[in-house]
Length: 115
Image 1: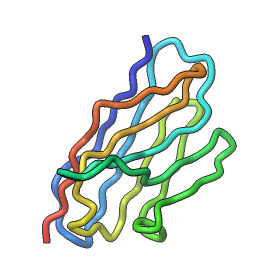
Image 2: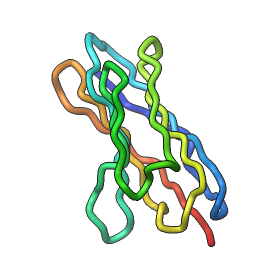
Image 3: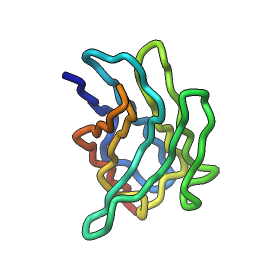
Image 4: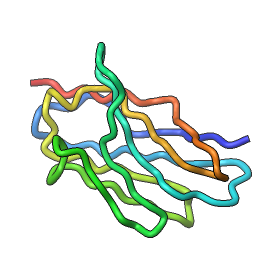
């Protein structure tokens, strides 16, 4: 059984920073794309950032220049460094991984940015 477990959410003031991490565990043979999505209350889930197995990244326009996605393949872990946070970044953040030719999601972690 494969699990994705996220860490690092919380409450922060506007302008502050948080770092999310997501570790995959279990019988893992291959991990391709890893990504972070978020879903604000009453909104649809949206892609925040994605990173390929080769390290190529892409970001939503709303977070470019503020968020950085990275991964440690040896640890099967993906990170999201979030700087200059804004109240509109408040959401549940979900980790995603294309793993063993299947799609997996984490349980989500709440990020709340106060003004």
